[in-house]
Length: 197
Image (cartoon, rainbow, N blue to C red; front, side, top):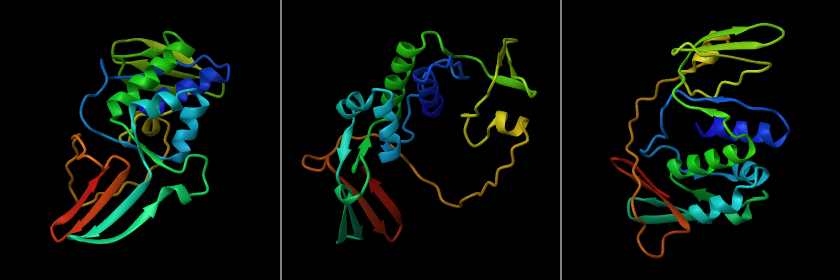
């Protein structure tokens, strides 16, 4: 969802009339992606949302790696030759709220929730998308921002190479201990890996 909202905002900013079709009725409330890196921060700046994101999120300047309880070393993001040499952590729910509000400012009514795309027809002139509830949208272009099981990509015949990983993980949002807000930590342990942002 953040990719579609960002693309819609960028299109609106450049004079296009975007339509963002979303199958969910409301934003997802559980933890998903949290770290926003320099290339994405540049896009937030382009659509006028960087300061809002910085206010809502947490700026990470350093990463520290541990092997069991032994500190192995630090990585200082400020040494990166990029416009935004840091990572911003922000729960995806908050990031989506910011993007949705900005899209609504730039293109009121562009976000259409509760529309599951079930049909795609592409010609040289336009794309036609039909949703499960019978609504049809026609546009010169159609962009797939619908994840790894993309219906749009599959319907357009765009191949993708997928890999299954044997690993599992658990992600959650928790309060940071005092004094750790600007440092990310990776703990390499005998039983797995723990990452804290």
